[in-house]
Length: 91
Image (cartoon, rainbow, N blue to C red; front, side):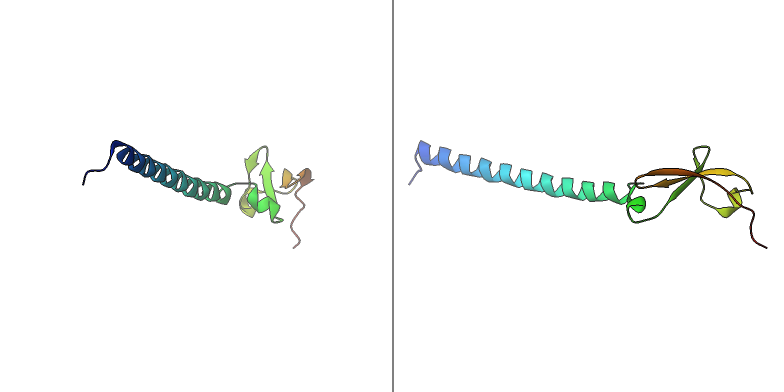
């Protein structure tokens, strides 16, 4: 028995609808994954957890070796920044 043209058309519409739904769901899942990856590398994220980003003249400082006594530095917090001066090390 051959399906009617209307039945064939209905079946095609159903297939297209399911395929479209699957594409949307796959895209949504991929977007969520990309959003999570982006948040993981967000330089502001550690600041929200209480860490401070330290710079001198706009350059990030990642080691005590990079600092000299009396250097002027900037402490970046989640809600702003403060300038500071490096004090001599206690000996």
